[in-house]
Image (cartoon, rainbow, N blue to C red; front, top):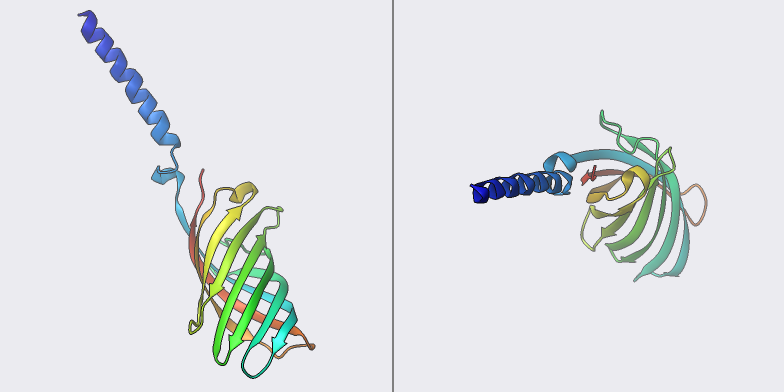
Length: 171
C-alpha cells in the first residue's frame, strides 16, 4: 500500500514538472507562433567608392530610411532603418553583404543580415538579434529591389525594396 502511494505521488510530481517544463519551453507551439512580414523599406544611401572601373566596382554604403508595412498586421510599420554594407559589381554580377537595423517607434530594434550573391535577383535576409519586445526573435526572408531612382547627388543611391519573410518570438 505504501508503495502505491509513493508511486502515485511520484507520478503527480513528474506530471506537474513535465507540464511546467514543456509549457515554458520554446518548443511549445503556443509560445512560438510564426508571424509573417511584408514591408517596403525606402532608403537614401551615401557611397564610399574603393574602386570603380569597367571590370569591377567596390563600394560601401550607409543608408537610412523608413519602412511601411504592406499587410494588415502592420509588423515593422513606421520603423526607421539603418543599413551598412558593401557591394561588389563585376560586369553584370552583383554581390551585396549588409546589415540592417529596424528601429521601431518604441526604441526596440531587430538586426538583419542581407546577402545577395552573383546572379541572384533577390537577397536572403536572416534575423540575427533583437532587443526589448524583439528579444529572442528568429527568422528571415527575401528582399527584392522594386525601384531605384536617379541619384539625387553624386555618391548617393535612393531605392525601395520589398522585404518578405517569417519570424518567431518567444513569449
